[in-house]
Length: 315
Image (cartoon, rainbow, N blue to C red; front, side):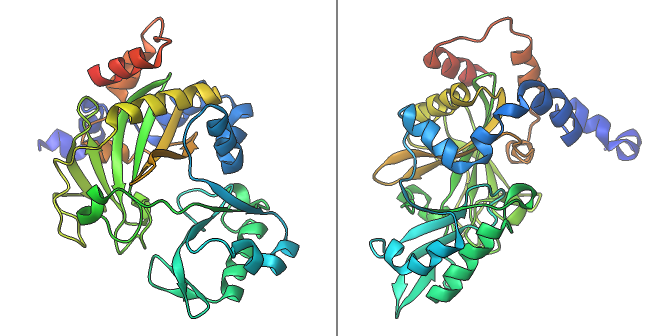
């Protein structure tokens, strides 16, 4: 690196097309995402219903707990489900999510290996209702939903939790994707800021090619030792089409879409985000700006999903 680059590292980042937080906010989220549409993605109940109405597969919703009084019937509400996920409807960054993998001696066994009593689980849900994990700290509700049985393809590159595929979609065209692999440090959650591994995916082929963990390049999963490059993501054509379709559901022009792969149900849309993070650039080792500027300069975006997928693969 030259002395100029050492003194002004942002010049190098700019040359590589790296987009910063301020540029994302001013140039894309504020410009292309009308504020009135934010509830469509900030409330996971609404997002799930929008997807179902459009024929998009999502994890089944078992129950919704909206008030403290319902916690008195928690045992009855959960009686039919051996495993499930508890999450805040307005949560972000994976905060407040509990993955229950089974029961043992009257306790709820979590993916982390911990076991909660019914009172402890009720206390956690009460915290969700109070808004402890919600955007802006506002009162929230808790969703009880199907626990994804992730595709065995990821057995060697995931620790306990469920990997998900984050795709940034601009003007209805997928522009960059990565798979997020849970680790011991991330407590089985697929969020990079909590310690998950981010792995870039080639849009044209659906094959992984590079990884980053805690801002350092990695070739192997830190817990399992599995090789993270060269994994061909199954159903890639369907995943690109599904993410392109999600843009039509919300009217938001710049979004992140999270997809999980269930071993029997295939791709499921987990949630959408109106303010997707920028770490996807680190995982892909390239910036978003050239692709975003290219699409921004097009007079028209193809209407058909198939044509948008073809455009994404050409980026």
